[in-house]
Image (tube, rainbow, N blue to C red):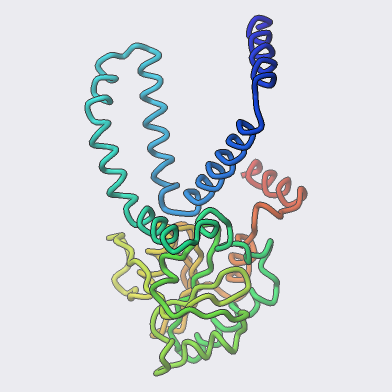
Length: 288
């Protein structure tokens, strides 16, 4: 142990002595770009797939260490095909990144500007507006689909709709989904405390176990919750019931208190949570 410590101390001392200003600048630039690339990937679908790829790579490293030659040979044979498959799978994300780079949005590409207006905790009046609007539309049998963005950035789906930039309010949400108005068809996306877009298209769930009585709105709400961490409030046009989807689960016919609880309990930014919030959440998980 002392030998390892001595080696690292000598290496660091040698590196510091031979390091020039240009070396420091290069390290800073590489660190900045790598850090923001990781953040960008984490906010896209690529993060979900990369976690699986990392697990497979860890298995490969373990096979090399344990000298499992047959497994290593299989990994080496399929590696080029896996790399090609990853390029195909990540093609939409790569294309959007290159489009942003080509339009001189380099810092936008590697920044958190898409999420900078998220608030630490959605204000009570924002959650209250969503709840009041949902049950107001439910009583009037007005169908609605409201998507609340979480950590996963929904730019891909926002781009399919009409861009808006308005503070969330119950009257505005009701007006958007009013029958025969241009914005009523499709989903509304809420980011933080602002309505970002309307008439957005969402992916439909391919879950074969979904009840046949559920329509397109419910399937779209489930679909977006299966591929992102977004919350979706659904108001049925046929029954007026209010439902919510989260993590691929459908909470049907919730009351106003339950909806408020589901929305208020999940719309937090980890960056600005208090220590007490984190300890309380950890204690609850431990008790379960």
